[in-house]
Length: 457
Ligand code: ASP
Ligand code: MG
Image (cartoon, rainbow, N blue to C red):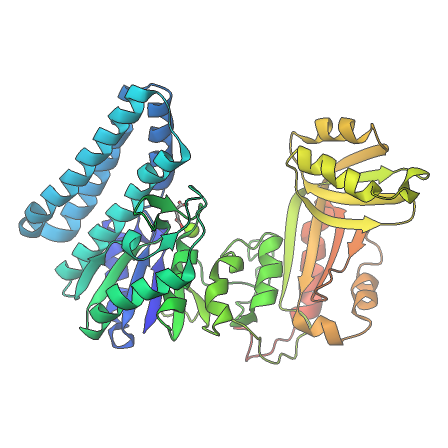
């Protein structure tokens, strides 16, 4: 069997859901389980109505709920045609009554807890999965809706609940496997689960990819397909570099490095349950379904290119912290990081010397306050308009002299910081933001002029 996951934009309206049905039709012999996100923007809107109700604005909350109801009715109506829709209408209607009821309750109490937020948010995936299942039937596919909350068991850490794999796997075997054996196409919502006691939970924003990986791992999938609206991962941003290539296959570690520095196609950490079981994960494009996409595997293939990709992250600020005497004091670095932590500012790149520490952070309005707290324990300077460039490739590990080669090409560029992470598969440096685009193009020309046809499209 395989898992096919479709994100919010892939199910955003009847046209998109129609495309999903066609794509799934082409895979029937692979015995797919389909996992869907809420229709695009629906989760945001549900959380907004929960918040409004919690602030006592019952009217505002119900108004948002009405708009959501209309959007779902319209989509279902267009997909199902009058006869099927009439039947389905009352089922959807009951869900929307429940939502209204819930919002009135929250409004009456004037407070919303994380547990209640999850209950509200879960409507998005519950509704989209029901509509997609019904649409499959209308398209002649043996779709059948499965309530994910009966399969994905989590702890009670609401809004970021942690899956309980063993129980989840047992339930998948019991509830989903028989449907596959009966040649059905189970359609399940991502993102949502429930505690052992049956209380609805969610596993964190963007969690549908994670759900797909959990279901795939639990059902021993041959592969997991994450359907998005891009062709896959690229050697660099094609808007910067028109000759960017699609990466056909990449290792999990490489994909993880890239995600960290901006390539936001898929956060690989979310598919770890699949990778750990050696199940390959494909990133595919629902607007261009014949494109082979990018395959992410536990171990990448041999590749004649040193690098797989060049990532660029702009809007970076360098913070230089210098304190000649106190650096010798035990626990000094910790005290610096504690300040970043207190301000909830996360650090991307670090370089230290005996007398100073340089760190980069995403440029944000916290920085002046952060700097003034740091100034209590050190001399601090900060400077914005920087960019991080990160070259990634497993071959870097076994190729000496690459740093010299890269910086040789960039002889005339002012390099502000250099770092090579312990993973040894990335070479990262910081430069002026206004030079970044040209530097990326130059590096791309150098390292991707010729590409390994097994690895790049
Ligand atoms: N609908 C959820 C969200 O918007 C989960 C997902 O789309 O993956 O965060
Ligand atoms: Mg997503």
